Image (cartoon, rainbow, N blue to C red):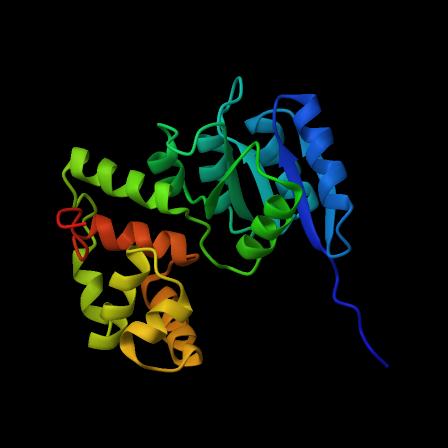
Length: 225
């Protein structure tokens, strides 16, 4: 007897009805994805995320009333386990940095194709980061402007082993597990183990938050990239 895995549950938060409906049609066409609800603004998103328990929330970053950043912060701090994938019109949106700090797991352009949208949801649901090269560059630029490190948690780096610290720095540079494995000449499964331990030791949600942590603590410096 084979057991069919349940579909990834998705909620869409956007103040534009056409965007919500369009994404709903595209995602429901995928056998492993299911749209379980829609929200019209940030406050609605917070309430429905608590009620519906989605795996992934597609969050418009700019909405009237409570915006996407505040809603992301509330949802990720609630302990619900939902991952937030922020929707932007431009890949260098001025709010990218703040949304990442609020707990977003990645970014997706609103004009993404159906395949890109579906794959983005799968990636984020699996706990992976979804940061394009342009988004990574935006992070570096923003940290340079703000003068990182900002966070008072630099001592937490001492909790990591030398190899884990090395892996964390490579995550912050945007490398995938396969790329990190090639760089360090180790098995990809070994890298996955290191990443898991890093997240547990530092109390982080996913790779995206690990990258933010690395910049904020000064482990990775914007200069030189």
